[in-house]
Image (cartoon, rainbow, N blue to C red):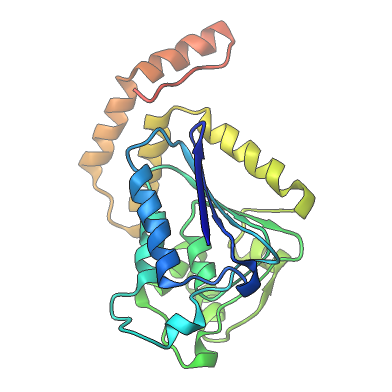
Length: 247
């Protein structure tokens, strides 16, 4: 089951099927994509992706892995949609993350894990050559050597190791996870949307090696010409919190 809410500029998508460790069926993956498409033109400023129970996500449902045509991989489509979403995204990892669930987490801009979290991708153990686009995502985010450990060794990583390889940005006790995520949401949500969203796009393009310099220059120029820029300068001089409107 997928639960989705959008309130006060914060979109939250929760994987809520803990009995099967929040594994993803085709229907679930399509539901998440549809939700993000609906939110594309909303007032959303930050997206939080999380789960319930002991695991964040165990990957694609085994019932779906062994059936149907996977030449158009729905997991890849979902991860691409999350990674390309126009606002910053936070994966609040409530527990273990496995298989395709790890790629879904990597598709987010930030990952907050809880103490005791574990991750591994068992592709070689079930005779699967992981999707090339997914492997590229690991190489882009973690580097080629960590990707070798993930895919060629099916290595099991524990919490501190996930910090070391850059899979996690933050590692916190479970009781502090919600507060930490809320703080990140407040920081992003209180910033100027044009600047934040524009720089997210530029960072993505630079990291992929396909920067559109002209488009990036236009985003920079638009931010300098924006009302939010003027508001930011005024708030700074008046020593108050700025009220950005995204224009």
